[in-house]
Length: 251
Ligand code: PGA
Image 1: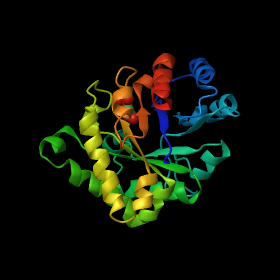
Image 2: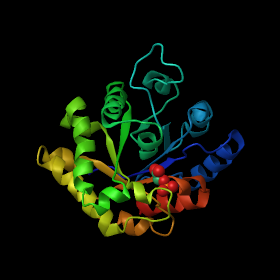
Image 3: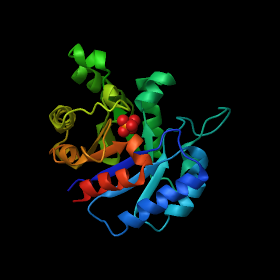
Image 4: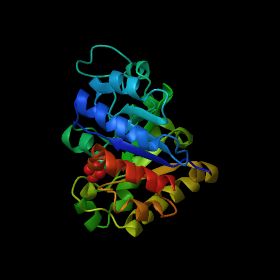
């Protein structure tokens, strides 16, 4: 059975006081739920405090980015081993905001993915097409390229220790969710592509959907056979919304 997972992507939001309130509400409500895994990916400076709050709970934590380099003269960068020092489980790699706003390309993302995995953390690899690419009928080709960049660097077997998040760029932060059928069709494309090489690997791979997942649409998305959970932006900052989404998957 593949794992079901909800991950909150806080992006560049939060402060020490609000984070504590948010996490204590979430923890109180998710405590004792074991039908799925739950995690939050938080800004780097909050990792020690989030670690402190969440250790000994059933909620994991992680980062939203990482350097592909181990150490050295890379001003402003954070290495995987630093994330390990703060108990991280997950690292979001290749989020579309990193790709479009910070110039990350398929190759540097593949290197970050490999570095994360080699150090024993779980990369959450984000893939997805822009509206323009979708309208041009290029969705599958774009996703294929994004996945192949990783396969070329880390190998197909690397998907046994990774999570993929399908996040159509046009659905992120826009309130325009992909319909359950639209999302399912891309998830199936991803899983089938991997199944051609290795059926077991494909069956065990957790594929999240991300892009305007809300309390009121999570259940119908999670009901799709190839959607194993969600990567949640805006709604992960509102305790009740995030809880509702986590519970929708747990059930
Ligand atoms: P959203 O963001 O839920 O606010 O659309 C999702 C994401 O960027 O991971």
